[in-house]
Length: 338
Image (cartoon, rainbow, N blue to C red):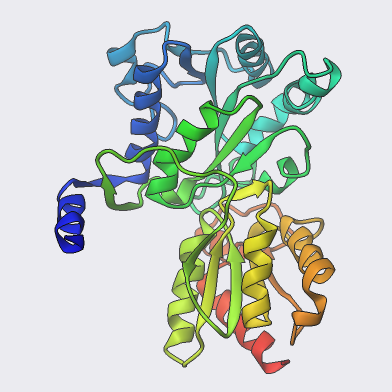
């Protein structure tokens, strides 16, 4: 019976890219709820800067797929107002770097309205944006600033790394009564794989063990997940079994899954495409020390981006961000210091 059910499930799986999974998530949301609309720069006629919204304008029209002026503060503020008035907007910001132009709206309005109104108002808004490096888009388009947003109370911060999460996190986020920010790593848009045709919502508050292991915990998220899994495969060839944790949610962090993994392996390396100083990796290190210090057999390692603006030349860009060849020696160093 189990085999039959599995075969049926596999027969319904479709080959899809990460980009298409996000598009299907938006399409599903638009069909499911008349209050949902998408707004942002070039989301309509152009089909989105990363082709995520291609075809949606023709299908749903300009009332539901709204091209906006090049004013992140302006259209993010409009999205906040629409959410407070009962709509369910999806605001697309072209890149995390440009989201800083809307930081006042996100930090001082969206994240604080529930608190400042004494719980009378909320902002059920979803903001999507591209993050990360690897496409030679230079320093003003390539940074990973999601750790900054994870610092802010009043919002949730998500980093879908798999097709399932790319498709399902938006559904769950749109049901949240408060603002949710979704960071899509630009290197994942071309990721391909199989996804159930009827894939639905997913939990947005729990980390996932993407590869079980006994020797060391490799903790990461977003675009770095696949590099970390590559590193774990290389380590396995040397009889080192690494457990790979995909954080999925950066705020709130799933401390329970992190601590359970570290308590088992007794060693940890955190892979974070943000800069090392003041990083999300630093926060995770501190939480492990606070909650599981006596479980550790070695200092916690970190693999982060170099402390420079992301370079344009491909070889320098690749050298500036975490890669599997950087992760492997960091894991070995932790094991050597046990």
